Image (spheres, helix red, strand yellow):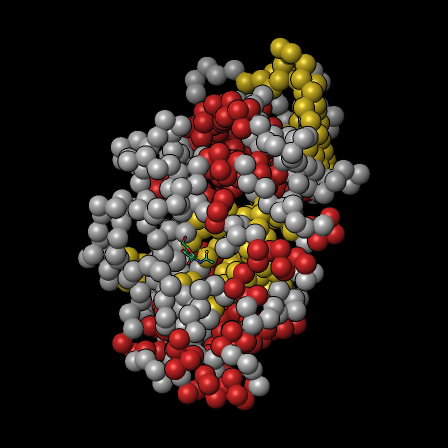
Length: 519
Ligand code: TNX
């Protein structure tokens, strides 16, 4: 059956099948309506069948929420009498439906039926459930904007790999991507740049290429609803106090005006760590409270990401305003000033029933009491945070940075020196052995991050994400086999079947033999 990610247990009954046809009905039990709709739409497109519910008791596919099963877990039985799919929650039923699609074969991933195709399901009994509750992927739409269709497609691809968190990196030095009604210049001025430096291959320079785009609030509502119907939470990120030059370009008063002429700052056109950071003033706090108020209206997610990464302190060191603020607040140094910034929004979000997440730099100068940490510079930040009783999402760049190259071959695109192979991702273990069982409970899960400095369109996002996200899906979903080590040879064997699914979906993944010339 070659399922990806590997389920917990699979019983197979040799060459025995259940036929699926014109009269196959899907009956949706309470709470499973979204999964039934999804199955009818996707399998309906691929097969040409309607999958309408028939008379009670006559339907071949029955979907049920059964709370004796673990949340997000499911049990999928295919017998000669039909399909019984039960999930511990509506989400569990949905993940089981993803498995069902894989069982139907690669053509079930197409959007129109192939003539003469016969559909059947192998008889089986599958019990399954996720290892982690946070199975995330981050897409940076700030460095390169991804038009809405590409975002929806990316969400579908996450769902197909049983990932359930879409971390949406919406602001950075190079662009502001979400409409904020009370601060319209964020997108009017901050969402586009006149030029972009460096391309996908070392030989490319895009010096004169303008770039831009943003999502309206209705686009965001659509994206969130689309993800929600696929049991994926959208965690928005508004990066503060660093990575903010696009916002400072739109509203120069947000910057450290006493040390830099912020009115002269463009939306940034190159990459790296930017010295132009937000000023630690009440004006800035009020401005961002306004931003986050609109963000909370748009995103129902419990977790709200505030960035916090790579905020150089040089301007604060030089700025009389920032120094006065440090004195006034009785702080020791600029690290504590950054921490003060993050604490403010930790309290602000907690008061509104939300939880703050930030990159591991938020540990510096003292971690805000309610903060969850995205551990990206390795395991260390995550270990420290978990030991201090904070929740953690493990996303170390050593293993799960999808913007890095997939091989060191001469034809491998992306002018970044680091290599993270499919096997590196597959062998990633999110829970570091240094943690005790009690501390390890704070590891909510894991996330793969795709930064897009040199990945400028959907096709290239496909290439960077796949097949590594398939391996990552298994890391996040499947329990570690006993003993310890994952079986990469078995994964590669199952990937042979999975590539046919990606082909049917039209994913421009990196071929096992290396990139195609246009990738
Ligand atoms: C570091 S990971 C960053 C990003 C870059 C990335 C490039 C993190 C929190 N910050 O701003 O895009 O490196 O790999």
